[in-house]
Length: 466
Image: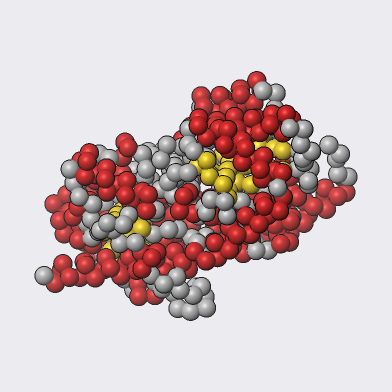
């Protein structure tokens, strides 16, 4: 590959530095506040069908303005760079933006100092969120006084008995349980025995809501509370970058230069933590098969690359070693690029041409990275499972393929389709962006959450008055 001149590279790096300096603090925070989640008709209230999507925040009063001066306690099982805690932080900042008094409790903290926890706690303190000890009397008093208590993830349920003890019955009527898990090992009575007695549960997709309804009934013999489905939305800060052509061009050029790929090359990327459940192994097998198909058909295409964003060699996982060994065995080291895990996903979304969402088994609970990619006008090649099926319109904003080994060849063929049909790829990207603008923005999510909070507050007040 021809190398750019030293002067050109230096100039681009100065441009990137200037761009990053110009980014607001809120934009940088937005890069840290994202999720990616490890998805009913019946008696479930489908909030995104009942509530008008509303006007963008900033052009009209926030739909959450009724939460002004109320006291809300947010309880998370951990404080980390994973999707659940970061999404709860996003809710904390939305509530602080309308004058809510917000307190935060992390139920499980490591005994040693942790730089990530320190950093995230100080981000919350800077935004006016009060961080409390997980098992102190202040947490108990706050739970009793709060207008609303939000438990984040199924695992947080253990905190109720451990900390609140005899006060649990007084708090349950004002609890909203926000569930993101799709894995079977979370269905334990130790975690969720109080679920039937809380004011409501909030789940990120219809698929996940139906799964929880069936699983709790069949495996645990308990009934879900009133359940609200709330699709997530992209932050205003991420959308600002996605809609800034200059910013995207600078980021695209910088990332591609760092990867050693050319401007005209095609990049297919998975952006997820590296684990078997996210399907990076099957993606690489599909990518290799797509290269063989192109060779067999003697297609004249730009050079193709696979990008795995989410690598963590410091963890020395067997799975990641398997991925790298496969790449070496197939001699495609020049085509596959491993990038360390990061929360600053915008540069990679600007740099790639197609997002691959290859989560396996039941798929993603929702999959925030999918709507983020669509905001950058990227088509999505996704598994036909979980929340992805509620985001991607098959054949319109992307292409879906089966989970498991059965999906390897279909994904390989879809990779070739989007590589060979430029206009189709670009049209899908544009339609994905339009779908985000219609359904998956911050103000859409705020409206949906507001409807849930109003209902939960009403039920809590009715219970206290009775």
